[in-house]
Amino acid sequence: MKKMIGNEESVPFYKQLKDKIIEDIEIGKLKHGDKLPSERDLAAQYGISRMTARHTLSALEREGLVERRVGAGSFVSNNKIQMDFITFNSFTNDMLGKGLTPSTQVLSIGHMKATPFLAEKLQLPEGETLFTVKRLRLVNDRPIAIEESFIPEQYCQNIKDFITNDISLYNVLENEFGIKLVKAKEFMRVTFSDENESKLLKIRSESPCIFREAVAFDRNDKEIEFSTSLTRSDIVKFYSELNLK
Image (tube, rainbow, N blue to C red; front, side, top):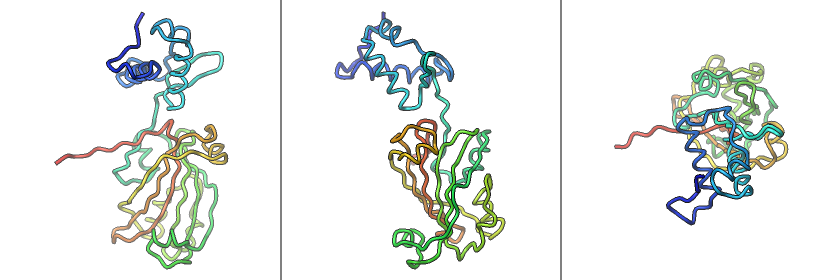
């Protein structure tokens, strides 16, 4: 019998066990689809209570590393999609580059007057007309993010005529309006999904998500698009590569 006693006695047993399972997943000892021991077996194997084992599995499920199936048990679901938040690229091209199948559903298209907040982000006069589009992003038919874009209409009049499901907004801007977006400034924070967002993303209400705000620029360093996205944290992992001088 293995005992869950680490170097730090203050570390709760459930966290010690959770960290061990995560380590086994990361080194490949446990793979996607593998079945984990039951609560009873975990308790017996590591000398902990069934309540502690249950707490461990629940924590792993909340973090998207374990899928619990009624009547079948708990299974490793470590198939997170990696998204680079340093390299600027369109969602479609990014997913295709990973060998995944991206798709997009247009939720709404419209126009609005620039609020003080949007006017400041896009460096425009308040009240300027903006084109808006809200879309649901999917990868391999799984919803992963809700995105909303705001673009000054003066740069892309009648762009709504070109926006359909599964079309790349950035490709439309480049091919139809000669606007190539080359960089973006992004800000991220953790938030929780509301009821409507949860239904669209097929997650529980008030699930932890990653909220992103971004301003995209063209070759002339002009602000072209302000966008927001709400991304599922259970199946998406953001990463970056940095060179230290």
